[in-house]
Image (tube, rainbow, N blue to C red; front, top):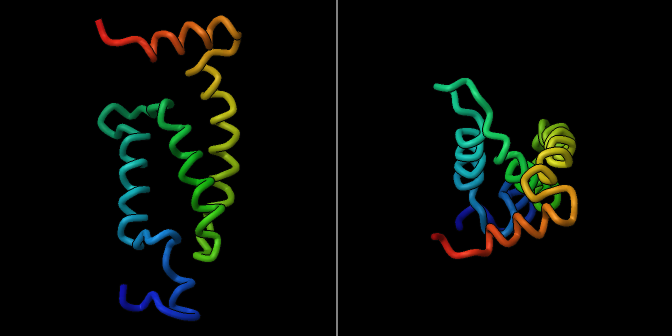
Length: 107
């Protein structure tokens, strides 16, 4: 797109062809999915998505200087380390059972 060629201008655009608008939409949707304002509740199943998105931006978009990103990544990483095992099981037999349930066709 225009303004993406060369030097300083390139440094202001997200990586891999993502536009600033798409990056904003990606995070806005995730924020909406994570926190349900009407219910005043968080959907903890979205924590891994926050972590994945934060990691992506830390790796690919560090050049944008997103000030809150390092702290968001740190918190998301910590939360994900507790949430992810709960989703996919801690013990081997739990992981096998959950994997079979996920991989089975619907009744």
